[in-house]
Amino acid sequence: MSLTAADIQEIMRLVEESNFDELLLETQGVKLHLRRSGTSTSMVPVTATAPAAAPTAAVAVAATTPAPAARTAGDGQDVTSPMLGTFYRSPKPGAPPYVEVGAPVEADTVICIIEVMKLMNTVRAGVKGRVTQILPADGALVEFGETLIRVAAAD
Amino acid sequence: MAIRRVFIANRGEIAARIIRTCRTLGLETVLAVSAADRDSLPAKLADRAVCVGPPRPTDSYLKVETIVHAALASGADALHPGYGFLSERAPLARLCEDHGLIFIGPTPAQIEAVGDKLRARSEALAADVPVVPGASVSSVAEAVEAAARIGTPLLVKAVGGGGGRGMKRVDALADVAQAVELASAEAGAAFGDPRVYLERYVSSGRHVELQVLGDGRGEVIHLGERDCSVQRRYQKLIEETPAVGLSSRLLGELREAGVRFSRRLEYRGAGTVEFLVDTERDCFYFLEMNSRIQVEHPVTEAVTGVDLVAEQIAIANGEGLRLAQSDVRLRGHAIECRINAEDPAQDFRPSPGRVSVATWPSGPGIRVDTHIEAGSTVPPFYDSLLGKLIVHGPDRAAALDLLERALAATHIEGVATNRAFHQRVLANPEFRRGGVDTGFVARLGASS
Image (cartoon, rainbow over all chains, first blue to last red; front, side, top):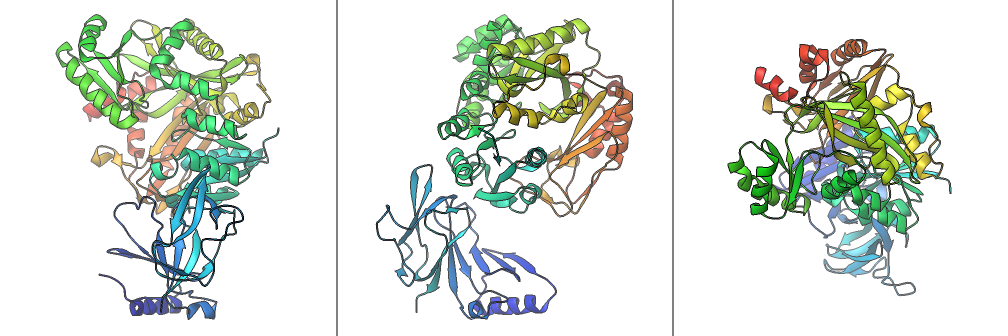
């Protein structure tokens, strides 16, 4: 079983009308986490085995409250960091960034480098669409699971 | 250079314990958390928590490069490894050293010297510290020959093992070959090191260990011993200090031996030298040295009034030993019970889950070190320790009574615990008399 966009809209409406701030729903293959005060609502594919180095793609459905703009953003997706390390937007200092806001990405497009004790790990988008936001500053420490970029689905 | 921000590469009750002392000392704390521990009590207590990876320890708490990267990037000047995980891994200490991060613990060379059991054994011999009759073996044929010399019962132990893992008891010489093959295969899989050695099994032994502090320049003091004989499958369950019923001659020699062993290494920081006391022969043997803070360290803190984590930090900070041996006074009797999320109905298998009720005892003479409160999760990825109940009284009888009341006031719901097991031990006349050997728990189980 999987959740459709309409299902999620309905669940969000129910949460919004309820007294609860947070909902964590796990069904076969899908984990849905809604948080009232948070900025994003994400749907994470649950895999039986840990994806080794592949970035986890999280589906940001919409913010529940209070940003109305985000709510209508629809089906953007959060690309989260597969590891803790230092975030670099370009392959080396001075080189152009891998991606800019507005750029199209494919699942195998490299979006950044995450450095762990001088070891450079390339991170791929894992999803197809257009980059709407790049969150960490170049050179910042990113944690495991932290959102790196947001991608809007291709039209 | 003065330590100002400490990175804690651990979880659970020991993370909370280290944070508490850091706070007392006015030090900032950054805690490494896995994705399963983001909402843990230590994560809330720390000034900052950074998520280092997914729940499985191999993907988070055991990743040396990630841990050091997180410590450096979060501006920490020192790293406390706690116990377990990377605490006794020389590569972590070395990587810290290479990057100017103070490792709160011994030097990489010291970790290596005591981490390899065969090496530790030869270090003990060199320090004139008695060891259990035994032999290292490199083939099954050699093992059979050595076993005949040592005699049965004997233990087959993994060179790279610890905490009872990779250990097999052999009662008949005919079984030696098979046990060695099996232990070697298991050790290879678990520790990446298939080497094993044989050791005489002391049938009536007590596990007595000595807490030491060294300045790293050859000065070592001890803070008394701990008796940890109440064990199930080599896992300690109850620890106390002082060890009762030992002759003052034996105790004196044991303390001297532990200090001598550590001095020879010019040991730095807090460490524990473990001995097996052979009660039948009234002698003791060196077992191993643990180059880290020990789970059961609070009983020592109770009777000495010394904060061992604070001393670890002071030594790491270059302050040396702030106590002379004559400053160490042992007062009263302290006992610790490990409250584990284990199901007695399921042969004490770990019982992970969500804790719905967590009421811990409090009052004079009672200390609880825990990371569990109502609503806490016990993830299935880590050890099952929920908390430690530590009591301190003027004498053993008073401590036992206090412990009984403290256990009665402990209520954990949502996960199964071994509380009832502890209550059974406390009610047992043999335990009440004191000085039980390491076979006690097995006998207790058989009698029920």
